[in-house]
Image (tube, rainbow, N blue to C red):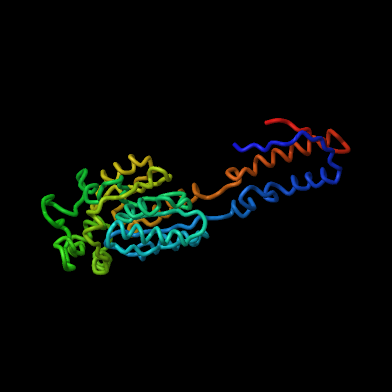
Length: 323
């Protein structure tokens, strides 16, 4: 704790100063300023919630969550995730985050979890990480490795297959590994939605899915921001994409505040309210409060000043003391 050291002086404050201090007390702690600015404005500030989608989805997958957060006054950015490679996607997000002022709650779904784990590094504005059925890799790990650590993922029923059997590969030219990956239309409802939506709704999502380049699953992570930033984790208990036990492993390893929800991998489509609730918990943890800014300490100091003023009757004597 920083301490202010005063020179050895003795001063008597006039009654007018005492009355001013009393007026400040009656106005409450919001009238005082603290280091870094006005405490009332800091206490009222809400962090910006940045939502990062994963593979086989786009930013519109957050629509219901965005509406709920905006209704409660939170600034929200549902950013595009290029889905080209972990390094380039993370660099893109990191650049986007630098344009946002003030505290940030960074949320990633599915592969988006890998992206936020890298992009948040060295950005002091990121106060909370939220993994929504998302990957939370350690340095050197790939999403593909984590999805196969424990049984549960239905992306492939043949671990030796060059392309996961639930996926279609579209060659992009160059090397054989330069491909875009789509979930097969007849597998989409099971893998991504655990058959929780009506068939016509699932068919629309399958038809409009955004592909992910193979590098998104196979490129090792360069960082693990969850080691230094507080994290929250939603584990869906019917996850057929990453696998529920794999999510539990990552959540426990990260020491995240964790909730389990009876939902599918695309939990925003099947239970958006649970997603919003967890984000609000993380946002509350990232939001400045009077207790954090020290206003309660100021109130105690001013109360002591008032008591001394009453005792002295005509003035206040402040005696120097050494820290």
